[in-house]
Image 1 (spheres, helix red, strand yellow):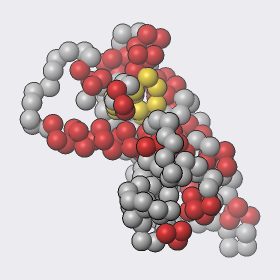
Image 2: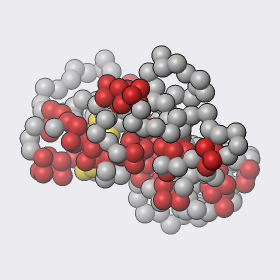
Image 3: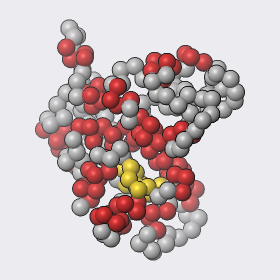
Image 4: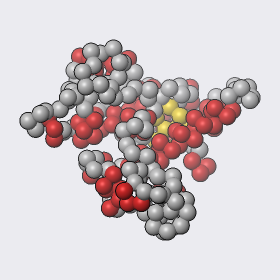
Length: 233
């Protein structure tokens, strides 16, 4: 059941309303989603959601013998199922075989072997903040075209409104991942993935706040025994 829930949420942009899960998958779901290694119960703007996560990471070593415990897969291949460098003269240093013996073993250890490439991509992107450029905090403060960002158009972070990630916003900041500055920073990310970035970054933000809240609350109060307590961390 846990694997089915994980796959279902990954196929639905990485997050699902908690009430929907409970009403459609039965009461036992409350026990399953309390596994905080894979599920985080978040409250973005008062709407309880279950966001999926994983501790699995892509291995970044070009010649790893397999002791890293990470997934041996090209990032470009993860994004789109294709790598332009694999067709070049120099080739690509990284694996393009998601179903290799090593990767199958690693995925099975993490309970992710039932996920498709696109589902796995969603999960890894919102779990590992190294795979995508961060949103510029300075841009989101101050006035003018670039807010307080000293790098302006040349900034390596995304100039996208943070508030836009979770709600409608009509401020003067950019609400478009296809705008010139974000497009430059996201060069190499396929267009079909860019269309999903709003939900991915929103989920990343929700996980960040969830973990910050856990660190603040750790040791400050006993855990409640209610079966629903895991929903409102």
